[in-house]
Length: 361
Image (cartoon, rainbow, N blue to C red):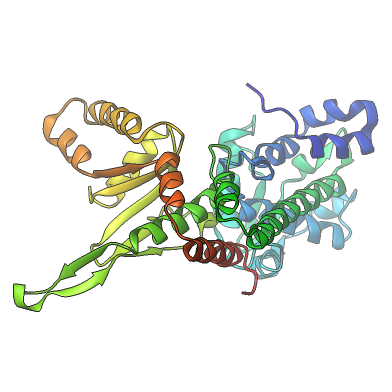
């Protein structure tokens, strides 16, 4: 089933092409790719923001326009391409782009575009000439008209929508800080951890709730009974949520416990995470309102499928599922926090969100 055209894309097309807007969209595979990658502007953004993919294309388009190649197909056909450092340095100046890596220019965009959009699987979107890059001109021209400026407008509107969305959370946090009633503060935070929450927001708030919950638990470690020392559990966030590097999300000290934040029903991903750490036990923090018992039962069923019924392999998978935590547990533990702990939690959300967006603290 085709993804519905995003309003912001359709409005730009209507402005430029009027009654031909839909027809242009249907002919433009690059437009369809932008539409596919637009999920992050919604509250239900299960997909990540994919800054690298957007900006890899945008950087080439920007220099293409700047160098006067728009509607100059013959001249462009003799052009060797834009230097990698020129493009990559530009990408890192864009909103949320300061930590980007080079995967998008080198392979990620082409792989995804080919797999999900391109009708001709042999026709890549980004052409690579040694260490120089170009957009395939066959994707720039629709009905013999160069749409580069329209594509640039779409990317810039997408960036604007993300900035507005990010600003709205900062405003929400400021309002929550000003609320005197602790129950009202908790209710507002609860409204931010739902099945429709954006992935990064859910991960950040989950982390702050879990960190505050576990820090009250005391454990004892030592090399002998006479050398036991007292520790409180500490939860560490291991990286940025939009890194998309398949890393474990949280790690607990001193007991070395792993936590992975994930979506419900993506059971294959769950077990890839388990394989990734060689069956080391993982606690799954799942963005669902189903009970933890329901999710655990579904995971056991998938372990049967994944193992082909082989008892030894199945038992390894089952033993690697340490615990399942859902929105229900997060809300319960949030409700137990004191006024000072809620204040700290709000400050932590603010801090980690700024880190996520590369904003100075």
